[in-house]
Image 1 (cartoon, rainbow, N blue to C red):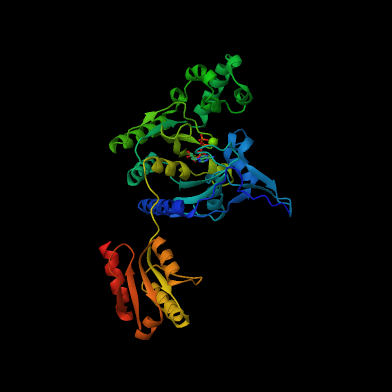
Image 2 (image 1 turned 30 degrees about the horizontal axis):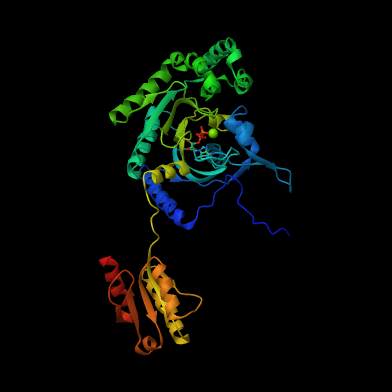
Length: 424
Ligand code: ATP
Ligand code: MG
């Protein structure tokens, strides 16, 4: 057996208890926020048939071409993939269980996503998203609702310095027209295109617009704009989203190069971007995907959704100086002797029955060493029990953040602890 220490997979992070406090606080805040808009939780498996992502996300995309953790189940040969995003799974689940049968759905999910990318700040191989999907809604009102609700979350979290970019990708006919124009245009500038762009020229020319290659920026800048091709309905839809944003005082910029990395989008797309996380500045992204449900086998139905990157949001909060919240604990129970131990267990369980948060010292040791543990715990007071306390059916109650210790009868203990808590 090798004695080298085993390490986590590269790009997949442990979240240790101190930092996990911040995650818990964040998750609570997010849940409140989503419930405020009537979104309901859905939980899908982390693993899905590979075919689902190929069909939903598109064969010629970064994710499907090079970022998926796909494998054959060695037990039965099934082709499986660790989910790289949630929309495809969510739509699959909704169709499989017929949730759209007679009502549209406002849904959300949270959890791990997996993409084989080069790990760097804000880019990991296992990361977390909060995904929000509204299925069965055709109008621009729901697109606007999703953007307005994001703005509310930023406010709730105290996040500043994020800006909103929006675009419209139109519908099938304008996309086809624009696609033909793009191919013709880029064919004239073939010598400037890098290998990726050359490869996508005929399969997915829209994605060339998304390239960050500095050498191609000038050519991309003058490429035909989909916005100029929009059909009347799509244009009206887009204008309606904009006027709702104006109504709510949410500033935005129309970015004609915003095309998103997944194939399923049409009409409204949006990204919330910050300049404070280096190159990994997109904290939230989404848009409308009216064709996806039919594409993965359901009855055609409009939909719109977005996903936020939790690691990037938390990095932004930490950048702003947010500290990890400390875990809360009321009491550390210290005891010595067998009778005292029995009493300590009863006292601890009784306090928990009454809603207090209690650590019962385990592992023995002198009073002194147990008190040290109590002092370095997050508790506001220690309850000390020895033979004298057993005899008196009382305990010593010692405030850990200043104050005199006192002997307290069992029946008064809870009340006294709450008084100490209140005085902190
Ligand atoms: P990027 O352009 O940064 O690669 P993307 O377009 O691939 O992002 P989406 O698929 O839209 O990202 O995912 C939504 C959000 O999830 C992103 O805006 C980002 O905040 C987060 N995200 C995506 N990939 C990663 C990753 N590898 N590590 C951490 N967060 C990520
Ligand atoms: Mg990506």
